[in-house]
Image (cartoon, rainbow, N blue to C red; front, side):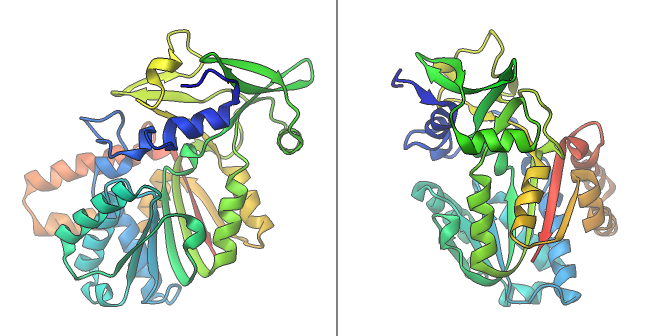
Length: 338
């Protein structure tokens, strides 16, 4: 790593998305990886989303030729789970629906294509996009699972009414007086004095709103409705979580070798959608969203079609997704309709 001073956002961009960055190659998720996700916990996570999609089509809120777009699909497990449950609930839809993945790395595109082809053969219509700007559709259901917490962010800290911005110099975090007018304006608007800020959300959401005529946008992420006014940036390595400012953290040894993330301010996301003239926006916990989507109903269907051992095993996995003390409340959701 070059020791020349750079903003924390530039540093995080290189850490995660450079040619040899953390996300440039396939990473195991779950027990063998650095962290768990809802996708790795239970296929019923995707199942609940599939049930919602089917219901929205049956209610006339989505067209039956909608394109289901996953933004950042990792291996392709979530999209595969959604497809499998759509097939179980209403198999005829696979003949009319289209599927797409937004993935910047070609090697990961190839892994996703191979996995989905092995799973479904020629039964689905799948396309890849390298960037969200390429996605121009009449109707889409867009899914972003833990995407916003992976956008490179700035670090800000206010002292004695002066706002400071985080930089990396000689592999250390240093703060210098902020001269970025947009950053200063944002922090003033949200009364933010300490934490992480990502202004790139604005272009991302504006692009979706401009390029897609009609859509449902669903995102799950770490975070809360409002800014915490505290640092949440942290490193994940082999299921160990270390706050970025912990004295044990060695940036040089973790750089590109571990995940780095932070909590998302959902109120900021809501404001951006509203600025793009969209008003149908629902903020919720993962627990409430998955229950509303019908995850309990899916368990009841499973119960009538399998043995008790299999049912109880899946029930325990679903509990992890919706327990208020765990993923159910820690993850928040935004469901937006245009």
